[in-house]
Amino acid sequence: MLGLKERAVTMRYVWSVIEETETNTLLNLNDADLLKQLLNQLESKNLLSGEQIGAMGAYISSRVPLIRDLAHSRMICNL
Image (cartoon, rainbow, N blue to C red):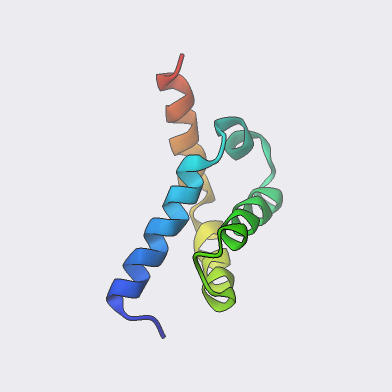
């Protein structure tokens, strides 16, 4: 089990990947493909262990509506 500091760092990595992902990708992929895309990006950066990436699947899946809301806000701000 990860300690508090490790969990905070992991969350920071996850949200930085989400922020780096193109807005259209976040808005246009279906939930399953969006989850795969984000997990693949995390895996390709080699910042987290396989176990951590696996654990982030459930976390990201539960945050898809929030991710889409943030992407929509980003899109509106960039108009």
